[in-house]
Amino acid sequence: MAEPKILVIIPTYNRPAMCGRAIESLRRQDFQDWLLVVAKNGGAKHLTDYVNALGDQLAQPRTRLLVLPEKGLGYALNEAVRHFGTPPFFAVLEDDDEWAPEFLSTMYRYITETGADAVHCMQIQEPDNKQSNGAPMDKARIRMVNWINFPMCLFRVDMFHKVDGFCNDAGPATDWDWHLRNLAAGARYEFLNQVLVRHHWHGSNYCVQVDGRPFVMERMQQGFYG
Image (cartoon, one colour):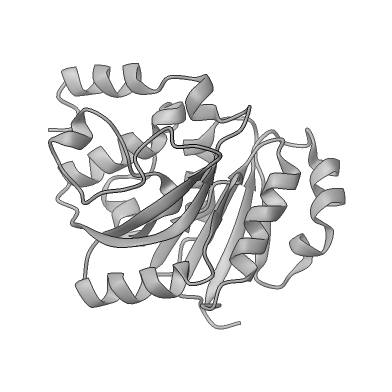
């Protein structure tokens, strides 16, 4: 198989049905030059549930299942990129979200046209809005609050190496910490004013259950982000 243009990572933990929905949204893309890594946290725990629920989805030739110990989101993303990160671009589709069929084609075209290090778009939230639906990068505002979720973005793999990957200890602030470190390293973000992501709110959203703000604020006070 020729080297794909985009590495897609779906990090997941004990949500096989939601993960299956996310995978289906990837398989419906009108851009098919991708490699999928399902980065399953928790080792063998719930592995049978995933195999039973996803079945044929895991057997596809462009899909890899990476079974990892329970060390969190940042660790899972780091392992996925380190094992499979040879494509020039990567995206993270969280297991409880979905992409519009034109997400990858639109984002890929935009990042190559602009030469940006990262591009991000708009999202729609269901069943109600609990955060911003997206906006252009504002370096002052993002030091106060993060409004750019992973599924809204496409990144150059070069940025992963430039900032030495994701933080293993950031928990629900993994995306926020990643953006701030990218910006400190000089990354250029470009905004695409199109709704291409469906974000689902439910009873087990990690970012609602655990507050990531103290982690980022402590690092900021230490001057970690410049």
